[in-house]
Amino acid sequence: MHGGACRLPGPGSTALTVSKAGVLLAGAEAGFAFGSAAAPVPGMITPCPAALPNGQPQPCVTTPTRPAGLTTKLTVAGQPALLDAATGDTMSGAGKGAWTITDPGQQILEAS
Image 1 (cartoon, one colour):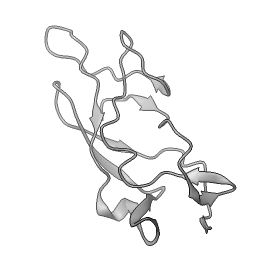
Image 2 (tube, helix red, strand yellow; image 1 turned 135 degrees about the vertical axis):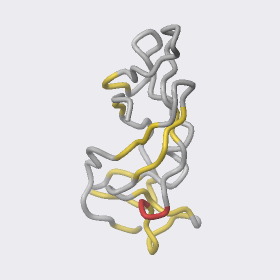
Image 3 (cartoon, one colour; image 1 turned 45 degrees about the vertical axis):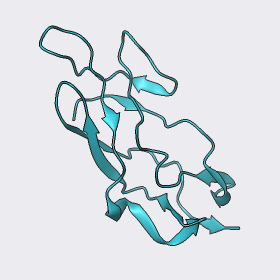
Image 4 (cartoon, helix red, strand yellow; image 1 turned 180 degrees about the vertical axis):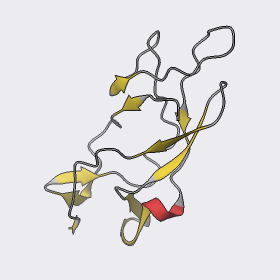
């Protein structure tokens, strides 16, 4: 891991909620750039320090979650929700990394 931290943007799906907050559906995590100190992004908590050998920042970009990080029973229009155990790879010009959920902020799913 390269050490960046961020909060994914968006309210999630209002059709599937936890404590009245919409859950993130599969795909919401894919293609998200962590940002760097030189180029921050919305939701960035800690910049990704990944850089090329010349020092040029190369913040990680997320790939879709692995199947074990998706619900198998609760979906919205066929899209599964991300679980608190969701993980995936990150891609960067500085090399491959990984992403994990560190604070899901939600515990119980409620379908509506």
